Length: 80
Image (cartoon, rainbow, N blue to C red; front, top):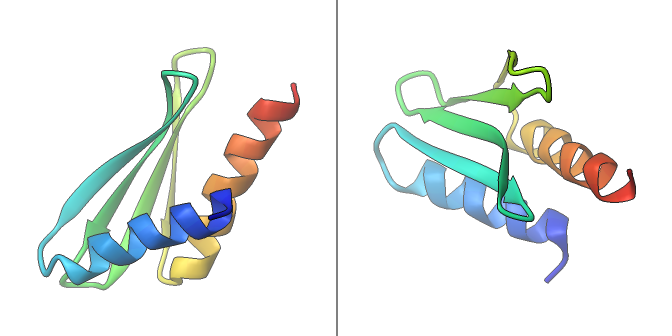
């Protein structure tokens, strides 16, 4: 399973749980971001943990878009 497929699978599991949920995505034991899923609005919130200690938050109503953002975040960190 590719990294993108794994991310998408985790997000789909969040949607299928039937309740609000959250999941952290890590790389080499370091938390890179947190995703919250909100059942009422069928939307995701992505919080990216920056190296300076700040957090950026983004809203998504498309599961594919949030999966791509997480994938790019993890890929960028792997290349550096």
